[in-house]
Length: 156
Image (tube, rainbow, N blue to C red):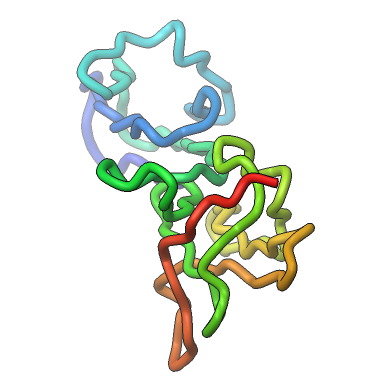
């Protein structure tokens, strides 16, 4: 995400750093990268001080696919890419073989979305090494097709 500050002189900008990020966020001010370790952080926010009019700020929040297990059924999980819930396009598959703590072993990136302002890795994925492989897409992209959100973990 990037934006240009239109007004102000010397204020502090609080940026929300979500818990789902997979690595340190990339933050730049006027093209200069700022290490998040150098910023004051508190309660999930990073504070950029002395922000003024015409500053250009960019933030990239890296993500990766993770399994979100159901609390009362640990063998069942949905997959998320950062904040994006993935839907499996299938009418018949409701199990995935593999260790849900290592989705990279049974799922790979299929495509990457590139937007005008920034690259946002809301990837489409495809399972691999399954009896029947399926595509996993962001839930908001599902349109008149059969899908499932929760899958049962089946270890080999």
